[in-house]
View 1 (cartoon, rainbow, N blue to C red):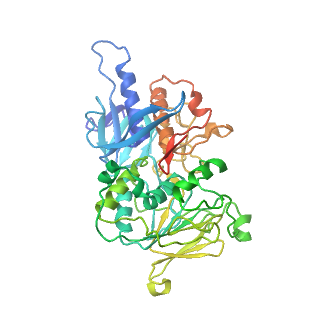
View 2: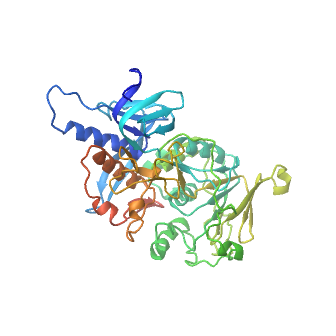
View 3: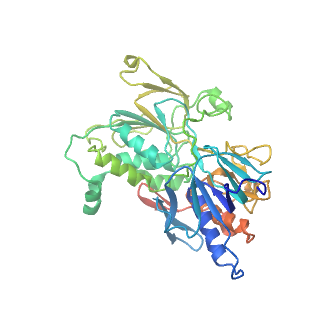
Amino acid sequence: CAHTPTSRKRFHYLVIGGGIAGVSCIGEIERLIVGTKREKDRPLPTVGLVTCDARLKVARNLKKRTEKIFSLDVREITDTSSEFKFTKVVKGNVTAIRPDRKIVELQDGSTICFHKLCICSGARPSLIDDNPFVVGIRDVDSVLDLARRLQGTKRLCIVGNGGIAIELVHALFRDRSSSSNESRAVEGETKCQRKDIQLDWVIRDRMLGHTFLDRTSSAFLLPFLFPEKDPDLTPKASRPSPTATNSKKESVCGSTERPMNHTNKSLDGSLGPYWLACLDERLNGASANLRPKQDTVACSKQTGPLQPNIKMHFETEVSRCVVQRDEMKGNGFPLRVELKNGDTIQCDLLVSATGVVPNTEFVPGDIIKLGPDGGVCISETMQTSHPNIFAAGDACFCSFASDNPTWLQMRLWTQAHTMGIYAARAMLGQGQELGFNFDVFAHSTHFFGQPVV
């Protein structure tokens, strides 16, 4: 960067990504710079943030649940003047990093010089199929699109057993009659005709929330989703075919790799836990109550009577998705979902809540080491294989934790927040031991409206 035009932007510290990790990293950099003693006439180091979206995700309402576990809310802001003291925000999509020249290239052709860089570019949904009737949830725009498409949906298929899938089912089918007067006022009761959505929920595990919960915790939460009758806690679904069980590497699409959605490669951060409020607002604001009628009961052969209009498909995965151009073949439904246990689902829309893929296409893999999932490999100091480049949040792969039996990376917003702070300290030469946050896995969230640690 020493021999480049003076018009090129230059920063001592540059962060890519406006999600929780990136914004937390910037906040800690500013705090450390302000708190560092320097000569009176010496200017402050320059700090820059590159983001493709004018909306930044910030952590609010940090609360200690235990001595070492905290919870936080995620909010979006567009006015950065109150969040950052002297950081310059650059709007643009990063297309390449040139570590040897210490520059970042943007889609508009411009470049930015840096002394130290932190990659916090987040991740995108790993969709089980690439077609217009399969959607993922990752940012506000995707939530708004889902709310819009649900207005004309008669039958919905949800694939996944993590936090997004669980909370989406809860948002669509929870009993609003037990809500407080204040909650009903906020949700906005409508007088329009109610509509029913038939839900097919595909889960490859034997119980709900297997990613986060053990069998006992899962059983505790079941009545909040199935209040009419307690289902069998150990459902015996039809077993997958031998070809499905013998090949652990086979994906839910029947190939060795899951197809990715390449229609939107913007480097956005994860949505955070407030997306349900956004979905609620849109669904109710559009004059549609998705609470199914109580006299309509769809029973799952695996579990007996369940919540109205929900059919569970345990211990199976999606084999393939077929777009039915002639909708008469699918009784009016445009998508046919074939499961490995032989079942077939006809639906209007499929929500793929099956994990994420790091946004690292712009990272040169021949210079900066990447992990098996495409994330940027980092050390315990959040440093990559290049000494001046760091990474945090969903974009990174914690290779240092591969031998730790008590901690695992799950690309959660709490982990992104912590990683961003540690990365900032390492960039400024104030790194320290990772401590409890990376010794024992801990997370605080809500499932079915209940606090879960």
